[in-house]
Image (cartoon, rainbow, N blue to C red; front, side, top):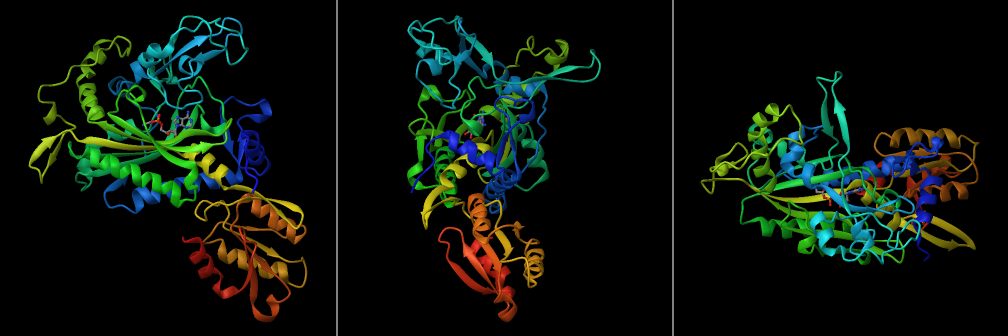
Amino acid sequence: MAKITKLDDIVSLCKRRGFIFQSSEIYGGLASCYDYGPLGVELKRNVRDAWWKSVVQMRDDIVGLDCSILMHPLVWKASGHADKFADLIVECKNCNTRTRVDHLTGQAEEHTVHVSVEAAIAHAGDLSGKVCPNCGSVGKFTEPMEFKLMFETQMGASIEDSMRLFLRPETAQGIFANFRNVLDTTRVKIPFGIAQIGKSFRNEVTTKAFIFRTREFEQAELEFFVQPGTDEQWWQEWKQLRFNWYLELGLKKENLRLREHNPDELAHYAKACVDVEYKFPFGSGDWQELEGIANRTDFDLRQHQRGIRTLNNWFENARDLEKVELAGEADDYNKGPLSYFDDEAKQRYIPYVIEPSAGIDRSALAFLVDAYDEEQVRGEKRNLLRFSPALAPIKAGIFPLVKRDGMPQTAKKIYDGLKKYFDCFYDEKGAIGRRYRRQDEAGTPFCITVDGQTKEDNTVTVRQRDSMEQTRISIDLLQSYLRDKLEL
Ligand code: GAP
């Protein structure tokens, strides 16, 4: 079976079939920003829904949240992003292109992880022999400099009112900032989690590889709060649960692995982190991060207790984040506003956090790549996407064999009945073989055809995408048949 080997093939399939387009394409495009077309938007929604079902709906110990993208600037001071979320970069004096130093030194070629500035400096070595990836000049670089990754914006209509804000670089902080609200308004008890799906923004220096790394993307994050001391056990548990989620949605086992971070790869907030990695078809086939599962300890909640204590200083310094110093930690921080009283342990503490953090766009790309297949059928090439039924943008195509003898009317009636329950597509144009092929390429698992026999015995053919086998089914049984097969 032929497989996609180049990113270009995926990009062209996505454009041809309306999965993904370049943003602002009619104006020549906007780098690293993408739009989801009619099929892509359904695929992405299904990825989101599958995550939400597994992480929130099916669990009694996890609740959801949807926080605003814009947050108080002190959130980012407390979380460490305002000071530490930066890449170490150099500029090529020949072509003025900026490159991450860790990419030049081969530490993290194409890697998504943001290497800390300290680690990048420690590993940088001599750059005089390094080659500019854009123009090929050797060693013509400026001194390394820090490049902040958060996008800035202004809030407020007048100059006096206006405040410098940031677009969130992760959804997680909205969860930490609402920890007390959730405790006070629900019956959750530790161990419990708060989940959120939403957009995040990072002014990435390197944005190759299609939707793999973009400046605007969607994250699905869970912060799972646990009693300190039980964090290691929960980290192991979530590592396995999240790995299995990708398998259950059809990614091939040989293309998935878990990889633990080295200490110098860890983000400033993490004690340990393991990545679920997928073998993407970039270059010779690269293992790349799909999701990170981090042990964030009590870092964030403790930092936000310091953030709250910084508010006076904030106003005294005319709300200027550059001038504001983060307050120290209170001696009794364990009893602070973001602490938790554990009824069972009869103890008050700041919970530890295990964080599985996935990318919706990046997962969608992995599902697309993994599902793609080509085969020869009676001397003709058949392209298909072998999506798991839960992810398929369209669940059933419904066709009349020909446009006469009442077949379109019957097919329309079936379509109207089924579309209440499943995403369906009605098509009566062109030869039936071509209609099947179009649905194969869209990843539609079933095609239902009304033919001459339908009028006689009220049955239709149901064609399976993968095997191309056709079965006759009574129209009355279609809904339960599909529900059963689609496992919905
Ligand atoms: N809260 C932890 C956190 O944000 P991360 O490893 O930086 O951790 C988590 O991001 C996930 O978000 C990644 O595994 C990836 O799937 C996705 N992601 C991060 N940066 C991205 C980008 N620039 N473009 C697309 N997806 C991205």
